Length: 292
Image (cartoon, rainbow, N blue to C red):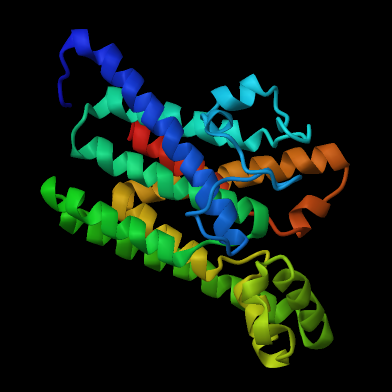
C-alpha cells in the first residue's frame, strides 16, 4: 500500500472525495444523456421546465440540499438519484484512496467504479448496457494493469468473464427457445424492445425474424450481449478469482431483491419480470475490489 504523510492524508482525502463527487455527477450526465441521444457538451437543464441551470445548482450533493430537492425555477421535484450517485462515487473514491493511496491501483479502481456506475444507471432505467463505454473502460485499465505487472492475470480474468457469461447467455437463449415460440415470442420481444432507447428500435419492430432473435438475446432469464462485455471488464480488473466472487455476490443480491419484491407484492411476479443485473453485479464487484 502506498503511504501518504499523515499531515496530508485528510487534505488529500477531502480532495479525492470532491473529485469522486464530481465524477459521480458526470456519470449521471453521461448515462442519462446517452440514453436520450443528447450531447454531453450542452449545459444542464431542468427536465421539467427546460430552464438552463446555474452553476451553483450543479454543485454535487450540496446543490441538491441547498435547493431542498426542487428546481429553483419551476419547483419540480429533483430525483434523489442524482445526489445518491454522486455520494456513492465520492465515498468509493475516498475508500480506494485510503486503501491504496494515490497510486496506480487507486486510478484503476476509481475508473472501474465510474464505468460500473454509468452502466448500472442505464441498465436500471432502460435495461441497456453500453458496450463501447465498457470497451473504453478496458482500454483505460490496460496501462495500469501493465504498469503493475499483472496484465497476464487481467487477460486470464477477461477470458474467464467471457466463458462464464457466455455460458449463461447461451443457456438463456436455449431456455427461451424452449419456453417461447411463434406469436408469443414475437409479442414478448416487442415488449422488450419498447423498453430500449428509441434509436435502437429501427427495423427490429418490423422484422419478425430479427425480433425473435432479439427477444432471445434480451431475454429476462438470460444474459444479454452487454452483460457479456461487462463480465469481461469485471474479470479484466478483478482477475478470475475476484470475478467468481463478484458473480456469486451479484447472483445473491439479485435473488435477495427478488425475494424482497415477492414478499412485498405477495406474489411470484417479480421473478417472472425482467430484472437489471448490472446494478447487483456492480455492487458485488466494488465490494470485491474493496476487500479481496
